[in-house]
Length: 438
Image (cartoon, rainbow, N blue to C red):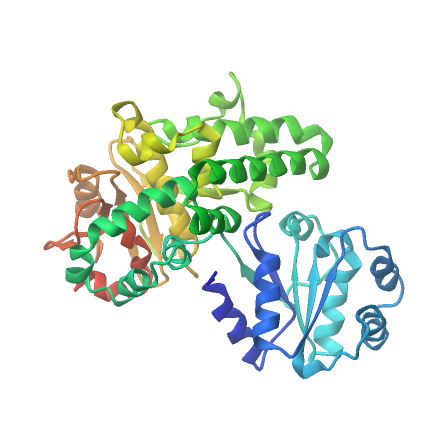
């Protein structure tokens, strides 16, 4: 299974300024697999240490964090010598032994020749909980579920993924039915690696759904096991409210839908917990369109999306026949599923600020507004081929963006002020902004 992130790991390996690397991401997005795959591809030897319930390693890191001593202990654990140049050290579930995280500072300062990658299913919580390691001494890499292009590659459609990379829209349009069918599959299967692998091997939607249920159950267990006792019920309430929040026409998060009379201060910590462990994407509103967009962020208004479109469908009990064959009753939720999909693809793009816009009267809403550091691009999302773009036109008249993009099931089209980017090609908004506007 090909992951784009492995290219980033190769760049990290070759960098003269390499620091110990921390891979962040929700449980079961493939962090352990990625680290081990990279180790087997790029190094002669790999030393894999899982810190979960590992008393021997907890004892090793409990006392002196002298790097020579730690390396000697790991050599004894692994049963062979650790040669810095050709050995990858993998620290998995590293949040279980906070001093192992702290040791990264000393490896960076005193033994930078060692190649160390770390991950953990709830590492984001540990990092934001004040774990003792200094910022600036480590590199970070965020890992998400498979993107749609990675899904194409995993399911035997590599040529179609490569065609998207080339942005040959004439050829892409000729094969649009292949892309549309694959996109419907992706809406159901999502990008969690175990679900994708099962689907690629067996094409069994029921088996995929069982895997998704297991993943959701594991998340629920994490709430009870790792979150502060007093906020567990609030985490569950927030998490379970997301499908109904997204089903609304205005997808702004409403505390009153979680519990009647609910207020922000009751739920802020629960939302932060879900965000820190990578289970939700919080997309804030902006009230203007200047660079940087973050300067115009309205912290009181936001949308919440879950980590994966397949898991969202599982949470709602969406049946594959409803999705694949179409159903009039499904029309309203199709918009929620489509926005979830687009958000998920945008989040995989590096160095992209993702927000949404509404004016103060609420008469103009832009589903997403993205900041690539050079320009602000409004993005309107349509679930089908309905191409009315009233809000986009209003936004354009007010802010005069260089590029306006609508993504829908319609074919690629470049009008005088508007580009229609097919939903299955929405990732291409990242690769070449000028190509979108040509």
